[in-house]
Length: 261
Image (tube, rainbow, N blue to C red; front, side, top):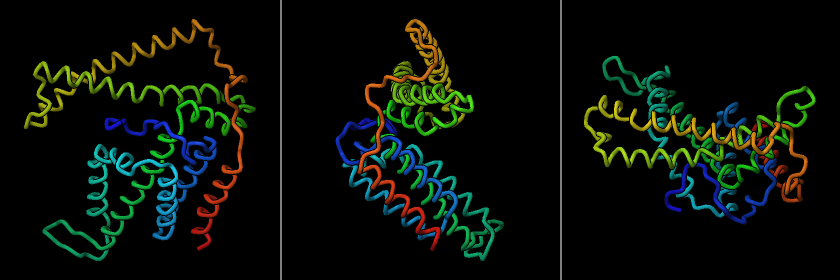
């Protein structure tokens, strides 16, 4: 389990694992909307508090959730630097033509906190819900659009297949990278241009393998007479339990309180 992939489902029987996928999807959307549309500190603190409670109830180790931040560290650092340098306001530090404003520091910290909240919320969603459960929940939430002749089931199937093959593609990328390293590929060369060129030895085989896997999957689905119609005979139908109603009530309250404040 030390090499668990980013966002991969973790088997468990916690309170969060047992919730209906629709409950977790709606809760995650509430958190995302509250973070994107309201950057006030008290709103962010409400979201952080709710995520801390969710981590405790999910029985997941915080190290496992935050492990994926190492891959996002460059993006977070770049975002913070751009906010720091491009936000105008009261200057705190002046070095030549570079000026750092107090508003830039606050904006950079706020942006980092918002991105971290989005990452933790989405990680909790994918780590406590199976890919099939996510696809079923998305299909159930988008069911009203089927009356407008929208391909809801096909969209849910695409999401399900995407979630299913993300860990497989990552694992295959690691295998190809090790194979190329054994052949002397200069992935750790001091010249960044050389390192970027060496990545083509991974990207091209990975793309070819992904296309081949997609073709094999399409042929397998056709051979099993898949027509794209909804599945009305699922092994487990979705239903809201008391825990789901309680969770949705708490999330709605936490979402509405900062708006009134």
